[in-house]
Image (cartoon, rainbow, N blue to C red; front, side, top):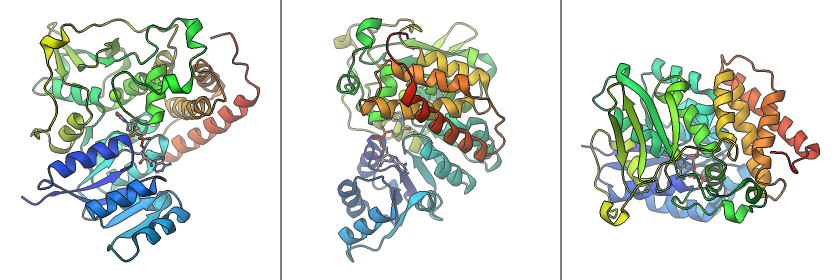
Length: 393
Ligand code: NAD
Ligand code: MG
């Protein structure tokens, strides 16, 4: 069997690095044909030398020149840049599967290009489905493309759905760790720093998703992702806090049975499953020792202290361009929090304010989503200047 040809968008990120790790440990099964990174050139150069892709893309022309100089004549690789470069990596004629692991709404256009080119998608970039879920799923249907979830919760749900009928589903139960501030009261939440927020208890991830986990916006984005991936209404998608991150998510059926998928928290498991399902690849991970673990705990999310989850449900209910606006406002709010511009509790406040100001439009083309995204970014930046984040939550 010839190796499956893969393109990794966002190869230098947390998911990108884990994907390449899976590929390297199964090099007879996979071959990297294209990859794209952002601005971490030393890591990207190392990856290019190791995996020898045919194409590689970086964000800017300047970075492409620098990468060319670093690689020199050592390798036969085409170095591209910008959105066009990302699209060229996503649509390389030899590629069979695209791992979509860019962070944020920037992942949408290359992922859509991959779908239109008929590539299978291993989807980590949940923002693609948040921003334009209906259009993405419609494009996948039209092009007969399968979307395999990389997000651990959605991978767990996919595995728990195997062999069951959709009509028999009562609810999807997405688990959430609750993040580092699960036990903080409202007063303590006002004073948390970016350093504290970046220290996730169970998962090592990129900065943006780590902050999203701390605010629980990540779970909100995942509810929207689940709505589109599994084509179920939002009232059949619920969130339960599970601090140990061992049960990755569950499906409840009409007879009361709940099927869950468990494992140690390591993204290589859902990545490998997205690349090879229904076959399972052996991975060098420590076994899950349930006896040592002793117990697993669950609790309800608190909408007062973590309003982002409710905001995501609200955006989903509003429909159309609202989720794209939620996502873009959140990207601006998270970046500002990381730069010390707004407090942690300012993130949901800014997102809510932008969502309230938005006149929801229809989502008929990707351009509608991109326009809403741009509008929300500029509205959020404007509000950052004169928004009072002090006491009220
Ligand atoms: P990360 O920040 O570690 O990596 C992001 C990658 O995207 C990097 O390669 C970066 O160079 C590239 N990138 C950033 N901005 C870009 C732009 N404008 N254009 C092109 N490339 C750009 O992020 P991550 O944690 O790997 O997350 C990637 C995606 O996967 C996110 O959508 C996240 O929500 C999702 N995800 C991550 C995890 C995890 O464990 N890290 C789990 C589930 C889902
Ligand atoms: Mg997840």
